[in-house]
Length: 129
Image (tube, rainbow, N blue to C red; front, side, top):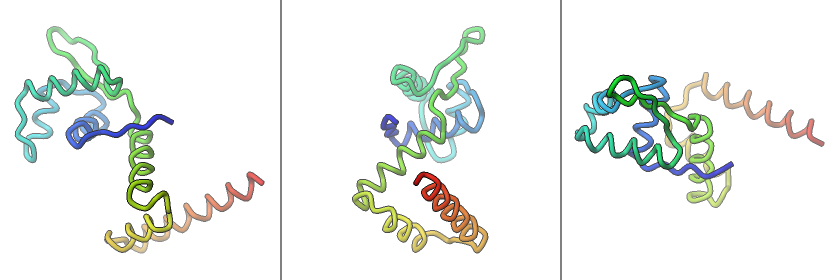
């Protein structure tokens, strides 16, 4: 799997595209507006660069470009989490999970779901032998 390290603004734009399916430059600008004051041209330039990098593609609707994500959210998430684990914890997954559990408000339901995921992974590993 290739490394997909997205800068903060790129990730924010991808989130809009993943959530909406597709969006124009204006749609992305409006969606990011409350927290980010970005010029229309800045968003357009960023989307054009992201298209060159193979993150998004576009179709033309009249005179407007409509963008959609090419990279799946899951692939980017996995790559970024793997990179984070490597940089912060030297790849030590236990340490990373400990940090997450200590720093995040984890509900009983989330803990139960995590235990289920661990059991599934244990089953997969025993099936591989």
